[in-house]
Length: 605
Image (cartoon, rainbow, N blue to C red):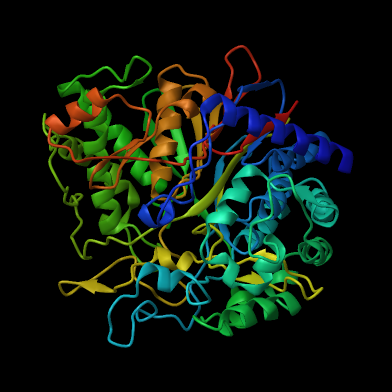
């Protein structure tokens, strides 16, 4: 096994370096990390991906070692769930900036008959309340002051969720799924170019003594690309979980270590208690599905805002396009007229998102059902607001039977995420988006250097809540409450043929609030007749009900000028997506695509 893992790692390094030469090596960004400007992680040089085709089964993940671990489970007769567990455990080791057992995830799964939505989102400690992110004077904390340390750490959910999903749909023994990650943690893996750059440019991680000892040399410099990194504490934690189940993290010595790291943080302690960990339970929710073109698209309901927003954006763009027709692609990139329609639709969708979406265990949907936001008559009214010129800031709509009970929420969201898509030999599929919030989460590492189980980072997901509880006398739906799950943009999606019901696509992305747009782009690529790789290679674009965002270096000035002429404020900057897609090939098998902006890869048979 180790030989296969090392061979995959060396091949990946060669590919990454070749890709840097092919695409050009951009200088490391100067000034504040992009995460503080709305992007989840620093940008690293793009690397060309070949696109793949598999006859039977495959995994697409954010790191070749993780994809290989998942593929090993499939080859051993495992299910898509088995592969996802193995891949996630490796991702937490080799891509610690983005996800891990100290974070959470959303997973949608197709068992051949129905779609299940598994909610492994983090929760606020029971002791948390609306004052969590306020200073002594009652003013909101600066984002930097809130995220680093224990204050923003929520109860991790990914491990409990995966355990529950495995009990329902796994085939291989639970302990078998941890073997690839344990081998890599004990024997070592080569630090990737992306991990090196993020370590070098992160201004907070060195403050944690355990993280500093693991990732940096005596002078505080990040370990070099290609250096072998061992994490025996992580291996010890995984061995306990492999033998004892998720209880090994949520109770006992690891739980005590998590709480100690949070509550005894020297600069910014938090409220997490062992009772919070012990009571955590994933939610198995009804999937949220919508019809679009010839497709049936299914994903997560709230507390994810992703499926709702994608549904609204695509539907409104389609409706408005009947009055204001446009050519989607011009010279291989989205046209200015089409981008105008899309950006306006996105503004309307994000206005609704910020008004209504929050943890459904605490906040009721408008008019009693989330589907009210997708009713054809409502979407038609929203689309009618789009004209030839930009509308400016959109206001939330009011579905039939709803009221504007909450204030407009403008919560900051800087999610650091990872996405994996899996198809197994039985044709069962999953899309899972997994996160620890900002890059390297709260910059709090558990038990590194003590020879005890640990060696993983904790999330700062509670910063996805609104820092204030009310505006203009009205409460915010996404305010902090004990036991509540913060709103998320994570958007794992499965797509089916509306007529036959046949599975067509599994997709999702990393990228903070732009995840919604990256996932929408993957669906649009399918509708435009592109392969998954061609769709991932397309330039990125977005709007959060503000400026129209375009990926730097990917659009001609004429596009920017045409949008500005329509009244758009255009913001051109780096947009680090992480789209990973598997799509049915009409002639048989599955086509795979991985985002060139990150280090994703596909593996399978």
